[in-house]
Image (cartoon, rainbow, N blue to C red; front, top):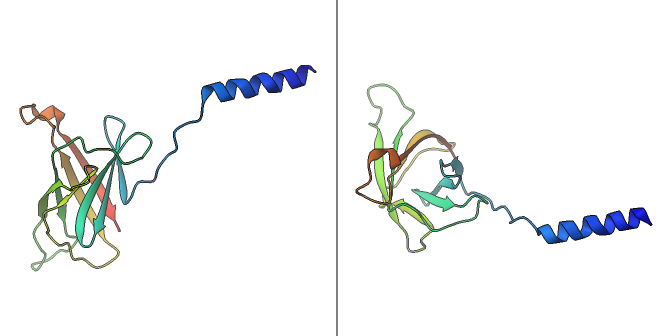
Amino acid sequence: MKRVFAFLLLGLLLAAHGEAAPTGKILGVAVHRQNGTWLGIHLTAGNFRVTFYDQNKNPMPADATGVVLAWTVPKTGPNAPPPMSTQLYPLTDITSVFTNGLYVAYRHPMNLRVILTVPARDPSAISPNTEIYNVKFTD
């Protein structure tokens, strides 16, 4: 009888606690941010795309007005292309930002070092509010 009571009590405690929020999946390369949220960087039709995710890795509204990406092509020698960068602008679905149409054409598998800059939402804010991440992008 004591065991049955213990199991009933345990069941009530678990039911009262509730279920944890389901964890989503981040598309592309995952970047953990300073505020506990996530960014996902991936290529869509040759364009970089950055998606904002909450703590449970579910898409959330973007908390930045844009993103700047800079990357170097892993080639050396006199014919090596210069480092490239682009500003990413908001999409119509407010969870993502993407490039301004700069097509990224590289052979697979990609192995780029990407510097991701997320400026502060308030343009008058000082630079410590700007987030900078150095990410190894592989596709």
